[in-house]
Amino acid sequence: MERFAELTILQPEDKEGIDEPRTLGDELVEGKKRLYIESYGCQMNFSDSEIVAAVMRNAGFATTSSADDADVIFLNTCAIRDNAEQKVRNRLVHLSAFKKRKPELIIGMLGCMAERLKTKLLEEEQIVDIVAGPDAYRDIPKLVEEAETGQKAVNVFLSREETYADIAPIRLNSNGVTAFISIMRGCDNMCSFCVVPFTRGRERSRDPHSIVREAQQLFADGYREVTLLGQNVDSYKWAGVETAPTDRQNFASLLALVAQIHPDLRVRFSTSHPKDITDDVLHTMARYDNICNYIHLPAQSGNSRVLKLMNRTYDRAWYLGKIDRIRAILGEDCGLSHDMISGFCSETEAEHQDSLTLMEYAQFDYGYMFAYSERPGTLAAKKYPDDIPEDVKKRRLSEIIALQQRMSLVRNQRHVGQVQRVLVEGVSKRSEKDLFGRNDQNKVVVFPRGNHQKGDYVNVLVTECSSATLKGQVV
Image (cartoon, rainbow, N blue to C red; front, side, top):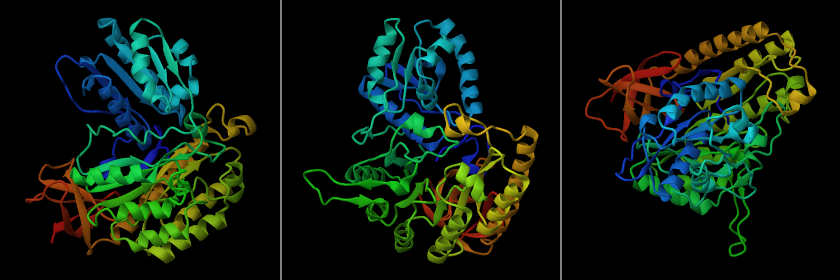
């Protein structure tokens, strides 16, 4: 499910800057030390930062949205691409000035980049005081205490059990309407291009009761949409405990449990691995009106040979068959998005064309598209030469992007003249006279503000569209 720092994203306008750092908001309390967190990369990182904020609050810290006011600065990092890591290194250059002005300032590196580089990061970046991997967040207060004595502090232990199920995230940068709920951590899929299994460890699923409680509390607090998060949500499984051995859940049954909380609580999920999403999941989506009619289904390539090199465990025909099942069960209007890599090792021009034709067959609504870049330690880096010239990768990527732009426009045009149920998320970025929200298919809809508020459901007649946005009038 990783989102990348150097990619092209064709999707609704409220996702602009997904590759830019995000910070938690202010919770300034006099007398408390102040924590500042920047998050890079995927939705899981943003969710993890809310867990870190909760851990640090319990340790007596408040949060601030200004690095100038901070006593501790954390960068929650991404390692999926080299460019993602370079952004963090560039940020550390800027933070060195903060350290000079305030020598007692503690700077910590969290997340996937910290896990990948471990103690090497302390040698390469002298201003870093703390290195903590994704499974070490409970230990961060102790690491801060150690760093305050002048010592470097490290915990990059990967756990087979940690899910942070008992920690209530602090949603200080939330719109108050939508929220993420992490249902599992880690990844057992060893895609040859991906570093995630090495930085986030093995899959483990969270107790379903804790997930339902968190969703219930969010609804009680006024939230009206939750997104269930995992590197591969469809492999969620809970075998129960000794006191309740029959309390077994898979992803389809978990979806149903969350959907049953309230009809006005919309449910989304991300990300699905094509090999694991089942007809049971699709039928559960069809059964509940409040489970959104949208699936993110990464393809990565449209060619069977390349998919085998990527260790994706399916071929082109199998993926297209899954698209057919989605359309058969959920209908032609089901929103679909994808990931696509251009220029993977040894990819030929004909194989690149296979990716384009797969996209045309699926008719994706939008996508996450990027040129392949080798990541140290992955199977691809060990076995396959990165032999496609950069100019060829970029040209192929531009062709993928251009095709997706055309398809996105066509898919959006289907909604013109239709009435869409929209959950209002806030004021449009382009005009304070307009509000925006998303429809069932995860598409942004912009409409005149009127007397509507965040968290309202409104029916909007779509009158026009671009490749990224629907526009209309409330009816």
